[in-house]
Length: 576
Ligand code: HEM
Ligand SMILES: [Cu+2]
Image (cartoon, rainbow, N blue to C red; front, side, top):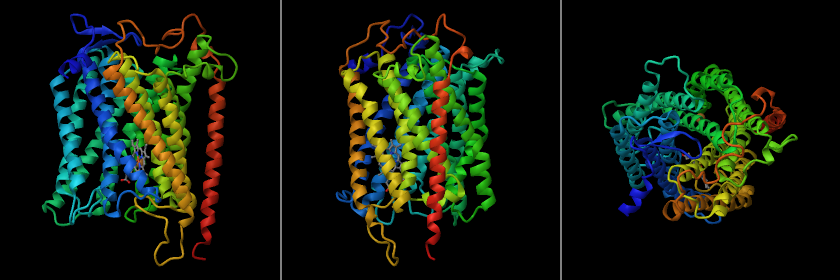
């Protein structure tokens, strides 16, 4: 065991503790690499726990099975949400900060003791959050993701949640110090794009963490009786600074990973540094205002406030996403055309390394995030359309489009990348590894679409263990949705099997995979090497394939927009 751990955390370093990465050519220091591994492995453990509860939750909503009794449902749903949305993602994101900072900059990780202290606090508080969620009993309730006051949630939960946020801040400190070291005495030196993306992510993370500490502290002092009453409207505003804020972190970390992985395994170039950087800066100013979309039906805030934040201001962030959605495929197209890889409209895409799971996971993440998670987010974030989405199963569909399809797939790609480039292990089965992104993206994609269909067309609510019965005292019946719940259940189970396959390949490769020799790129490096040679300058490269894709995206957007407004008009007869 000790031997194994030592082997996992060791590579051939020179006397200063550096080695050269055989895929990226980056100079990697032992400290940076080992902490990426530590946080990455912890994240995968959280994914497993969250995934187990994805199964119990899905098998309950699949009414024919109805696994968990009603009284226990929130406990399971809370375990699913916190382990998978918070712990899987945040541990990965700290690893991403260390990749984007010290590894891309070729530095050692400073303050390694602080990094370890951060990890320890995060792990301890994650365990205790799980404990309080699982053991909430009697008059106490499981918190769900939101821990809304005045639900009677265990005091220890709030305390542990605060601690987790503090732990994440401590773990991020070495990243900030790295940026400071890099810029010290060289204030005009530009950070590489990936580092820049990671840095903007970290600033947004600070805002989210401050909001979270404020929200949970406010609830905590109320729970222990320091204040007698609590204003639920204020709690909700504070809570969504972290509730939505963590999703912004997920988004930015994912986009940073998109730039990184399309470059190192697909041969993408950056078409315009200025444009991509400006898009990150737009996020900095506008994305946090999106948090207001969670307060769409709150009576405490004015309609003008809601419309301003979720529409006018938030479109600054949606615009930034559009820029990335163009810039990343355009970079891939330009980079591959410069190398002469594939002619015609889509030859650059069809000739891409589709068998490489790092590549396919990244591309599926981009496509599914955009088409499934992104479009629906803009739709339901609009005041009027929100009326048909709010608190329905369609909402759950939307955020599985963003986090379970988009972010999770990008992180799958990153974990596979780290297994080969940092753990230096070959996959135990190349075929199974290739299969993972296709299997998971396919099944989860369908499960997600069915969730939306059930929510929008049948009005099936979220956060209930059983829905297919008439709403008491009304004539509304949603029992027609029953057969579709089975389709949802089947694809949900398949998606979970896709996740199981991912974990088996990842952990199996770590334990049993053969070791890659120094210099072996494990078939990751793009055709023609990392830098396009001898081809045309980037602006001479044709990007009409990407332009066509963008037109398809826009057409889909328009169709869904019109469709949603049409469906909204159908509601006018209610109560007539
Ligand atoms: C195989 C994959 C998954 C399946 C089958 C699944 C299934 C579900 C279902 C059925 C619900 C809704 C329950 C309800 O409202 O009654 C749910 C909620 C949720 N899921 Fe997933 N999920 C999966 C993966 C993920 C991933 C990867 C994430 C995040 C990274 C995630 C985050 C969430 C969150 C945040 C909630 C909402 C919890 C709440 O309402 O407080 N899920 N999931
Ligand atoms: Cu949000």
